[in-house]
Structure formats: C-alpha cells, structure tokens
Image (cartoon, rainbow, N blue to C red; front, side):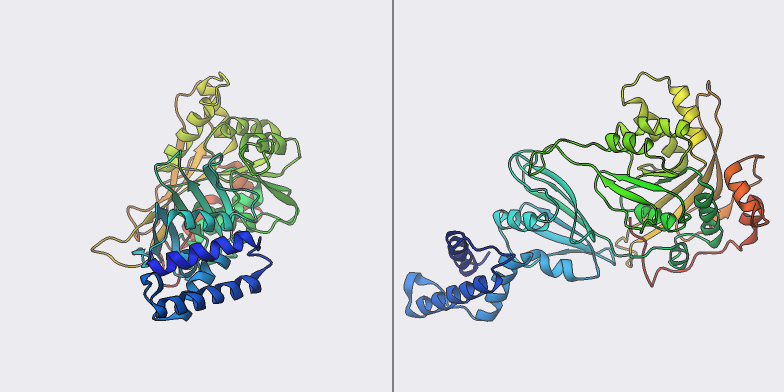
Length: 441
C-alpha cells in the first residue's frame, strides 16, 4: 500500500467516523471530505511538510478512495468484470480466476483491515456480519448474484475469502445443450423426470455445474406443483409459481437470533405438502430427514458432492447414518433407492499449462437407481449414458432392465415414447463447443 494512500485513507476514515457519516446515505458529504483531504495533502506535500511525496494523479487517488469508502475498493474491478468467475482473498492478497481459467492477482496492495470493511459492506444486506465473535460467514450477496464464504481469525490464521459469481441467468435445458453440457436426449429425460415428480440426485465436485443444472430442472417443473427449496445459503434462483425458497440461519448472526438449520427446514417442509422438495446441498443431518420424504410421497431433488453417480448414493447413505439415528444401513439404502430414480454426475475440466481456454463443465454420466431390497448391502445403479472423457460422445451403455424408472416411463408414455426410444432417438455425437459460454455451479 502506498504511503500516500495509507495516510489519506486513515485521515479520511477518522473524519468520517467523527462526523458519523453513513456511506449509504451521506455519499456527497463523504466525497467532499475526500476531495478536501486530497487538496490538503497536496498543499502540505508541495510545502515539504512531513516529507510527503506529492500525488502524481490526484484524480486517480480520489477514485481509489471513493471506491474504498463508497464501493468495494480493490474488489470493484473484479466484481464488475463479467469475465471473472471467482474472487479470492488470503490475508491481504487479492486474486481471481477469469473465464479462461487464468489466475490473476490485483496490482493494488491493501490492508487486511480495509478488506474486513469491504467484506462487511458486501454482507450489509444479508443480516450477517464478520466479527471476532462470528468469524465464519456464508451468504448470498450482490443481489443474489454471488455467493460469499469467509473464514477469519481466530478460526483461520488470516482472512480467507471466496466469492463465486453466478454468470448464467435464466438457465434452461436448451441453453445447456447449446453449451455442450449434455445432449438433447438428456434434456428430454430430465424434463420427463421433473414432470413425473421423480427423485433426481445431482452430483459432482464443487464448481462442476450442479446449481445451474438444478435451476434448469426447476424451470421444467409444472407450474401447478408446489415446490419448496431448502438451502444452507441460497443459490437457486429459478422463479417458482407455487412454492418458496428457505435459507438456514446461523446462531452467530448479527442479532443473535435462534439457529435454523437445514435439517430444521427439511423437517418443516415435509409438513407443508410439497409436490417437490429441493435440498440445495446435502452435507449433514438433513440427509436423515430425506428418508421421511419417501413416506411423504413427494418428489425430491438434491445435490451432493461425489465423484460418480454410484458414489453419490453411497455418500447420501453415509451422511444419513452419521446423523446418529441408529437406523440400519440396509434400511437407509432401501429407502433412498425408492426416493431417487435418476442420478446426474457433472464435472469440470480446468485449463492446464498445455490447454488454455474456458473452464468446461459437462454431464459425464446419467444413471438410474434400481429399487434395493431391505437387506441389500449395496445399490444397483444402472448407467444409462456415459462419457469416456471430456468432449467424448455421451454414449448409451447397453440394454435397459425392465421397470427401470416407472414414474418416468409413465410420463414418457403420455408422449408416445419409451425410455429406450428416447435414448436411442437422438444422435449421440460429440457435444457442441463451449466458445459461447460455460456452465456454472
């Protein structure tokens, strides 16, 4: 941080605090104050007071201070750049990843104290605040266009921030087919599943496109169905004609309000007659509450971190068992195999030193879940379509067992087709290129 900027920012900060000026309402007064500070600094520098170097570009300094006090400071340029996907802060270092997968560092040097102020400005509309008492915060910020995760001392050894921007809006199956995420056959299969009220599990690693696919699925749900969505931090954004979005609340919120966990939300929703229950990301005890969805008779859609379709079901079972309800594992497997019909596995291919270009996200596997017996030791997950690698054809894997997904089959029958005819009816070719866009998580 330049000495001139540090001196000016500390002086302006004291005056703003002493005058009790609010950056949200006293914008003009703060800008007048900043102008006064710069003019005063220049006069003293020209007179040789304090051995201060004069400013080569006072307007550039004003713009930087203006962004610091009234905007998002060093983050502003990255937030406004549509090519930037994620922004990271580690201590006082700020860097980002752009759409080509390049890591870029900010040229501005900034203090951790200033970054704390900027983070809390991002959190201002969320009811949450980063403090010593609340050193971990997750929130949807910037009008729902980004997700912010912060871990600060004493939990971390230094300030650590991840801000993920959502670049795709109004996601649809047609749009994702155009981006090469999957084929028309997968789009038609997912449409049928959503219209039939089937259970759909979306899996993949972080940043693989799960939330984008979920948004597209929600847009395919019939308008008459009641859809209730539960998330730890809200990321889903598809409009709901009949339903609501719910977000968990932490105990360390600014007003010390009562904690509302994701498990609490799922339990509540099961008593509110949903046609479709959506859980943004299953990571903890909420997995056990999903077992009750089988008795509630509603459709379920959820995401989970996993490395394959089969691994996703294993992860779901393990998470539910770890909730500590002393339910036999085979009963959990049996119930989940009845709840979920379809599993979609996504992944991303990051650029490497030998391959530059946009971060690519594609569906690598679509699988169906066969009903498991109560004493079964494992799931029967049947792959329907699979890629050998990125950009390889999304190929059919073989013949289909009878009564594979009865709800989907019944829905397809209304259109005069069968599941096998659907999968065989579209040419399975190398997907379209990703020059015009990417799929976001």
